[in-house]
Image (cartoon, rainbow, N blue to C red; front, side, top):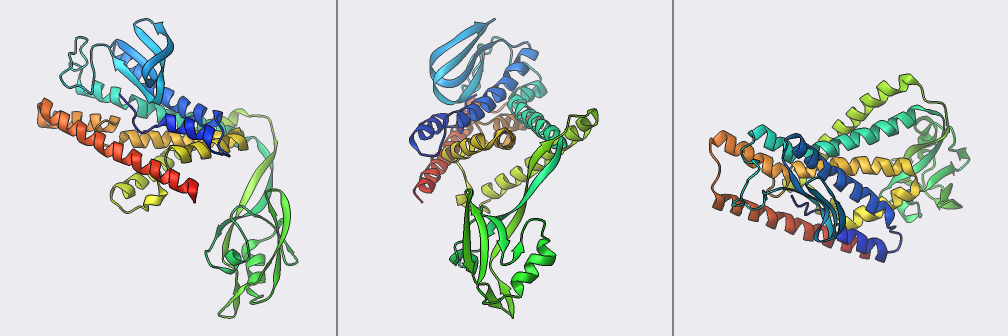
Amino acid sequence: MKRLLYLAPSIIVFSLAWPGVGFWGPVLMLGGLIFLHELGHFLIAKWMKLPVEVFSLGFGTRLFGFKWRETDVRLSALPLGGYVKLMGYNDEDPEADDPNGFLSQPTWKRMLFYSGGIIFNLATAVVLLFTLNLDRARVSQVQSRWIVSQVVPQSRADSGGLKVGDELVAIGEKQLKGADWQGEIIPYIQARPEVHTPFQILRNGSAQTLDLVPANEGGKGKIGFLPDIEETPIAWRSLRVGDTGPAILRAFQGTAIATFRITGDYVRLLTFRANIKELGGPIAIARIGSQAAKSGWRNFLSLCALLSINLAVLNALPIPFLDGGHVAMLGFERIRGRDLSISVKERILTGGFMLLASLMVLVFALDIWRLKH
């Protein structure tokens, strides 16, 4: 069951070749998630008492590994993802022999086998979010700061040099620490149309002062940016028994909310209602993963949870060659009352492969374009 969209070789190459992209963060993140995905298929196969011939991270030539019962656990030369191969059965070859009885299993069991990776990716997200929520429950003191989250293009903030990520220290004589943005800062800016106003900021730890002039819109000053308050934990208390229940609940809630949101994103993409520039491929994942790893284990685990949900939703799509495609085909055959012909299955698999290959080329090209702009 090949995972054609992981493109780990590209991640490794660009992790080494491009400045600012680390190596171990992306490799551990994607390698671990791919391993857990394939582990889901493997464990369900073992539960069904089906022998597994190969459990591989990567494709192609076997580099090294070990034998565990009848299974060859291996690391292969081309880290394009991973696969689990049932002994005597190949789901990509409809004419393959099935001496160990996978095709004779009830439909629901075969669906469960194909869903194993999806289930494990979602379970991984729940565990990671549970860990993060337990840590958040221990926070006893936070340090708040105002961060620029958005700058309107061609606004006074944009032309004045304000950038996303800048920390706002003071606006004029108004100190931002402990300030009421709606009740204090906005009225202050609105009262200063066309008046030079110093913005004291921190950018990458360096103090700077920008001279911004609010535009006059209907007699009120307007700069053209949006702030967000960022709270950084600075003190923690001991873990309590009562922290566990809420942490579990929030983990499931967070996973469900993210799953629905990401599913909506894929629906918008597949119905051509999403901006194609929003797509991120292996290089984008490598860069973000590296940055998250360098910024601390909390951000890294948070990104791992989000990416694990992404992989679950992606593999659940009813596209041939993905797990969801196999489940959809089994469901259709069940409703139909008989299996599709071998020739029809081959055409469906070929179409799915072409679609996925085209998508891979597109996201890879977008990643290259982003690196140059």
